[in-house]
Each structure stands twice: as structure tokens, then as C-alpha cells.
Length: 159
Image (tube, rainbow, N blue to C red; front, side):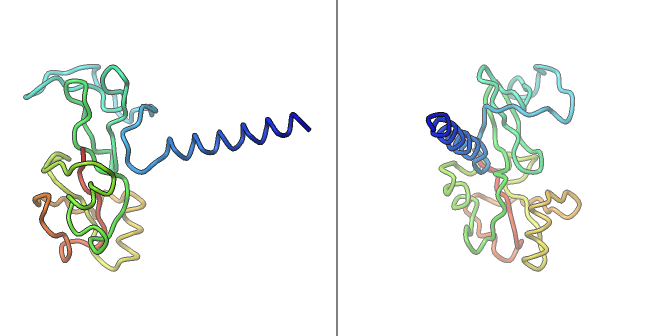
């Protein structure tokens, strides 16, 4: 009986640890295999670019939704929070990023502040959840600009 109690505690602890590690769009120290080969460090305008999959001394994962995210001078830069939201629930990127205790990163995700999908809600949500690169629209909006009417489902660039 004692073995079953310890096993149950271990199982619950493992589920909690996995759930916490997989939280929405957070910077994670859990690495992932890079989908492309990058030099360990490369000179770039404004700093040294590092591996966004293993950034800095802590090896943080800076890559967010759609594979967008950078590591410069050992720190994660703006990345898309990998959550699909409607502008109805978070009307601006300031509100979206704030809901994750982060700040909006103006034009810091491959030159855009937000990325979104237009069309009927169910279709736009499905394209967002599937990470559809073919129909995504980069938005060069300010962090406080309302997104309603521009897109149906979005991801914002946060830091």
C-alpha cells in the first residue's frame, strides 16, 4: 500500500510539472531541437545574435508562435505569444501581452507587432492553432492600436 501512495504522489507531481512547463507562450529553459542550424553567435547590427533555441547562459527558448523569436546579447527579444486570441477579448497588443504579465514589443517580431488571420472565426482560429504561414497577416500597428476590424484571430509580439 505504501508503494501505491508514493507512486500516486509522484504521478501527480509529474503532471503538475509538465503542466507548468507547458504554460502559454512563456520563455522557457526547456530546449527544443532547432529547425535550422545557426552559428553559436553571429555579429548583427545592434548586438550579437545567439541561438534563439538556447539563448544566453541559461539556455532560454526565445522562439514563440510561428517560429518567431530572437536572442540578442544573450537575452530573448520580442516573440509571438503562442496563444490565439480574438481582438474582442484583448483589443490591443498592450492588453494581450499584459494578460501574460509581459509588455508589447513594437515591430519586434520579424518587423510586425502582431500577426493575425482574417475570415470567419472558426476558420481563423483553426489557421492560427495550426500555425498557418500561408494566410497569416503581419500587422505593423502600434501597441495601443485597436485590432478589431483588422483581423479575426491574433498573436501579439511580447517581451
